[in-house]
Image 1: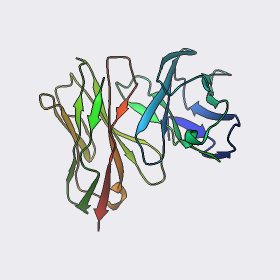
Image 2: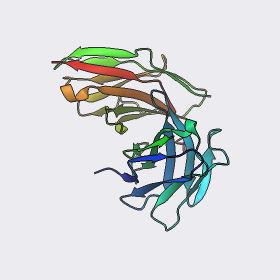
Image 3: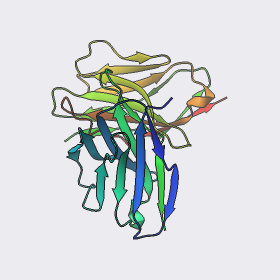
Image 4: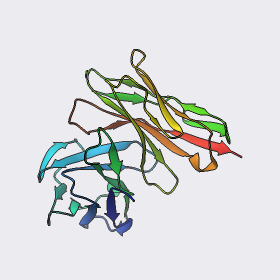
Length: 114
Length: 115
């Protein structure tokens, strides 16, 4: 069973639309991470989130991106006005409680911007 | 800054044979961690194995082992007794100072297992 479940598994949207990707952990995790992988390219770090605050973010994570934990369980990544270049697989990741070092990824949300 | 280099874009291995996927890294951090992930064609990212820079023993997880050579800055993944289901992309990644999980990934190696 995956440590986190991501929804939707695939979303197609028009350029300029807002998109919300969701991540739900199976247990009470405090640390969350978002990564993205443009088709055929490297996996890239976007942002880390701890205790309801952003702890690290990359240059990719600009003003059009935001993260929040709206209800204490779901963890969301919002893209306010999607661009064609936002088309990618977006992964939520978390650290298994008590395990040293292991970072587990969800199954990913594939975003296609038309 | 950290850097991961995977020099093998593609590898072939006969079923039941062992295969080594290469990974070299560069970092100025004293404490760091190294990861290997498997990405099948379906797209999910599956954690395989982790090695901390201060771990004295090489990490092992079932058929996976990490050949960690600190002086050479290499962290090669060894898969023993390859299976057809091992065909996938394999990514090496590292994190820096303790507490940071901002991973730097390599470009990956596509492994194909031949029956």
